[in-house]
Figure 1 (cartoon, rainbow, N blue to C red):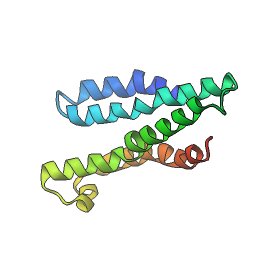
Figure 2: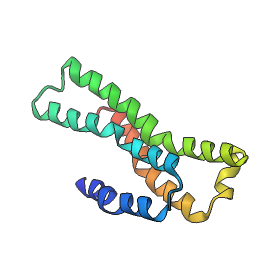
Figure 3: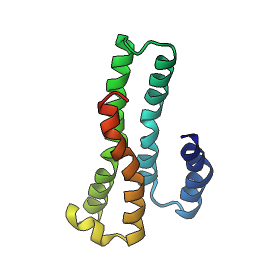
Figure 4: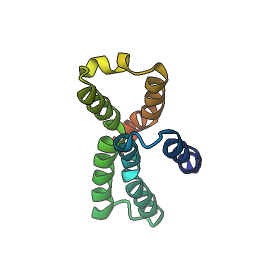
Length: 125
């Protein structure tokens, strides 16, 4: 679980900042938004360890987690595709064809884990 956070800090962030040559600040900022739900994940685990999973705080935290997770991790990529299409004058459904295949593959790889976790979050897991 910790490995992907270490990879983000040690690999993805340096690659994104060095290789982008000053371009893509908007997209980099959006990708960093994906971490906005992390404090809610951590707080939820702490509350469970303290056996406070039946409290109002845990319920409120779960709602905040679900909201930030959906907005900042799952809906992030459709938003990025929409923003790119709007900036380039490409229709939303045409954006995947306008991008290099490796960009679509990377977006799919980054989107798959959060999308698969949504049912677990909805069940309270």
